[in-house]
Length: 113
Length: 114
Image 1 (cartoon, one colour):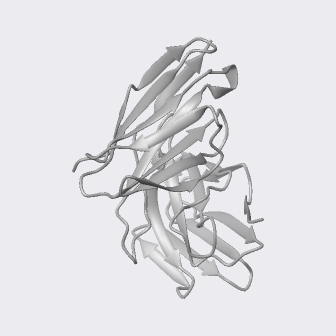
Image 2 (cartoon, each protein chain N blue to C red; image 1 turned 90 degrees about the horizontal axis):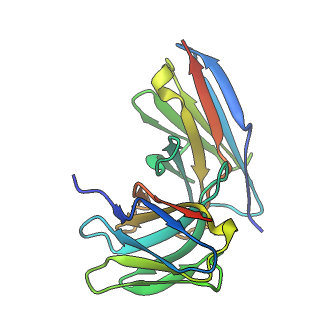
């Protein structure tokens, strides 16, 4: 069955540095992968979607890469700010190209001033 | 811009009672999803509807049922509630196009079963 793993449960970064979060998947080849941000007690918020034929996607200070050989996606936040502190969820589809997604366990990112 | 609306925001029920959660998707979105998120857990997919028909089923207990109505709002019905059903329940909606898969989540309903 499909398996999604995010590199660490929690990550602490100094303000201004680049935060890098990892999402690894096994046992299938998703056609795309999404990243969401979730604040405590709130619903996830869509950030970026990257497709299997795209190496990299950017949105302001966010950058996502998708390596289908390594079966891995990296999520970067450059010039990190305390307001970036949240849980970030990797969300590929439930099977190769379905529109239904599954969430990774998330990485709780804390940016210290 | 209009967002996904969920009601109620908080609900307290006793064991073995029933609960109904409501979701109003973003206008013109044709797909609704329900998720359950326990403390410290990632959201778990329960069920989804596309154009008022059940389109996919996840880890939804047999005690739960859901439907989507003609106005596209959806209801999640939960019976014989158990303590373990205490969680945040999120509804999300999306507009199904070939190039669009992002889901828009509501604020959630926090269900507490005592």
